[in-house]
Length: 163
Ligand code: SF4
Image (cartoon, rainbow, N blue to C red):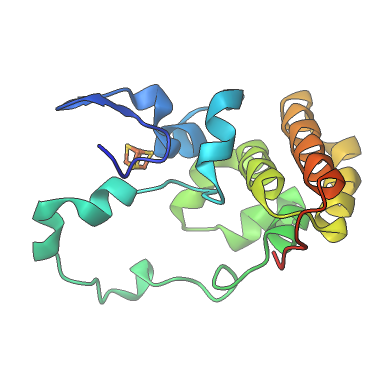
């Protein structure tokens, strides 16, 4: 209950799925509620923090099937690189993965939130501004939020990020 970034466990044995980052970033096709955006941090597809501390999961073995291994294009990838993907690139790179489930608009929505949560970086600001014109209204609203977050941090003299 304590580890959940968005406080989705509203009581013992009680989960408010609409606060869960896995629901918000994978299943939901709607805008992410603003109060939950900052707590999401840089989680762009699911969360599973509660699975990491679940006592039952200590019995689970690491998967050896190659299908469960991280693909090179996702390991150590900069958020700005993933954000710059066209829809065709997104479909190509996510072929055969669960990431397809969120759809291209969901992908951009989720990364916008993470970019808004990153430390101020002029490259992030430029990347958000570049993507805005070709995005859907729902994604644009998240981009605008992220731009505001970046500008707030810039004006406050925040550190430059390396994302
Ligand atoms: S997956 Fe993450 S956001 Fe969802 S309930 Fe677990 S800890 Fe909370």
